[in-house]
Image (tube, rainbow, N blue to C red):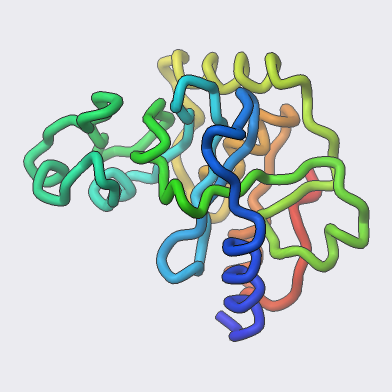
Length: 192
């Protein structure tokens, strides 16, 4: 990943992170992982809970103060939400700690200008408007409760960002995956 992209992401994480107590149901949240190389996305549904789409190997790498590394390998539940990582992945409802780093939560922006779209990191915003928060939470909950889930996880075309954008707008696309494919060069956000 180019140095400037890493610097932009580090600055964004430090300058724009939000306290979890300011989150509202229907917010599309994300946090950077693995040295800011990629981000994990989900929909905050209230009561310290997030519905998010995890890849098949994601469950074995949750890092949280509520789940120890040994408890993951031995199949124990989170002490806060009772989440037990699924080896096959899928749409899950967990506490914020199982979702990601509470000190570095960010809120994905909708309805940004074309200029913002061009200068911000991919996977952080969309020029499209979000649906009403009640619709967003209902969409995420329906997918969670549907036996089919959100389909098979695919890093490039059906991932956590795609799921969250779909919940917010009824359609989805992951531009952070596209950024990785093109070497992470340039800005831009999700045009869905």
